[in-house]
Length: 225
Image 1: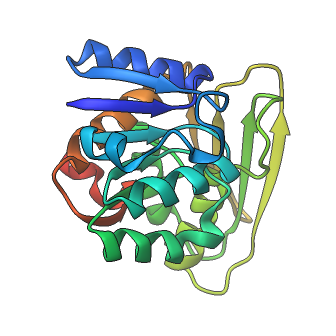
Image 2: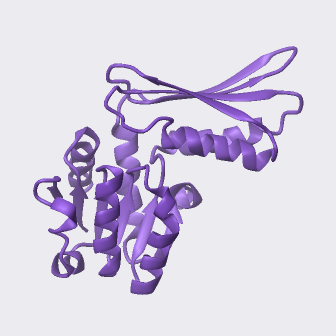
C-alpha cells in the first residue's frame, strides 16, 4: 500500500515507522508542507491508498474535506472535530470515499470499551472516569474518556458519569473506569506504556479501510482486523 501520514509529531512519526515495518510505501506531511490541506490535490489523493491523520482538529477537518471530497480513504486518529462528523460522513458517501475514525486506536482500549459496558450492568453503583495524558494534549477530557462515558450511558441510560482529567509530563495515556458501591469499589484500568499500540492500530486500520467505501468508527470494526 501507499500510505501518507498527516502529522509529524510523536504519534505520527511512530505511525510512519510502523507502516514501513509492515512493508508499506510511506511518506509524511506536516502543517508547513500541507497548509490548510493545500497539498492534498486530487492527483495526490488518487495515487494514495490511505491517509492517516494525527494532526489537530482544525487541520484534520481541512484534510478530510480535501481527501473525502476527492473520493480518497482516510484514517483519523485526531479528536476534537466530532461536531462535524455528519458532514464528513456525508462527504464520504457523496464522493465514494472512506472514513475510519476513532478516539483511540489501541486494541487494548477497544477491550476496555467492552469491559466498561459489562461493568455498567452493576446495580447500585456510581461511575466515574479518570484520565491522565501529557501536558501538550490540547483537549480535556480526552476523546477516549468521552467514549467511555458514552459506553456507560448507553449501557445504563440516565446515570450520571463524571470525568476527571490530569495533564502530567509525557504521560502516554491512562484511563480508569471506577464503579463505587456501598460495600466495595471496582476499577478497570488501561495504562499505555508507549504510543506504539495506538500507532499499530492506526496502521492496521489503514490496511482494513483500503478498497472499502463508507464511514466507520474504529470500535465497530476492530474485531475484523
